[in-house]
Image (cartoon, rainbow, N blue to C red; front, side):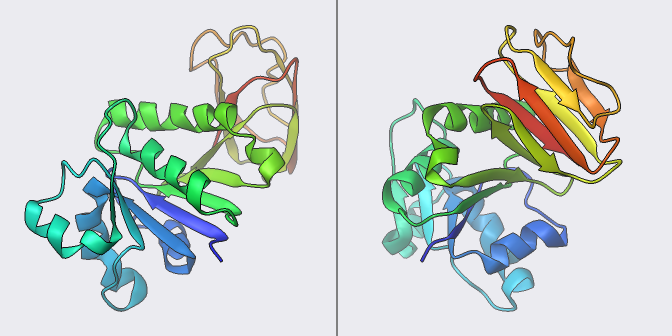
Length: 221
């Protein structure tokens, strides 16, 4: 069983307990190639012993020839450069782990702003490319500071009163009617990323009603 899969990218390795708990309890752990050294440095603190990931995926440009040989039995090398290592890992999961229920992406933010923005937008790309909801697969990007996930249509979430909520969409034709947010989003035109950020839940349950099926990124603190 590979119900909970963790993909670790080469950004800021998590220091707080919740993302480390996700690593510790994962059924399958994948490191993008640049994240392998960070994982190995932190594995004892997380597991109480040294541990290897189950798989290392990427173009292997960040791994020495010696380590490629040492860990050859868990390496999947993908040389094409059209997609980044996160997408290569995500695609491998979708093609090979048929019983996956949750994919948690860690280490995808921090250190480089361009990588952070690119990885955040990839959540929307995956939601647009795959019928994740229909497949019953949850995908969430977790950092030490919050979590984010993509949605493609009207949905409700129990997030708790006072929780910070930001909404980002690349679709300037999309309108989102909100219930349960301190500042309603009904009139927001999504023509730039900041337009519906820095909001806050005014009740435990938040409902976002899409004018049409599209993509949006939800960021919670």
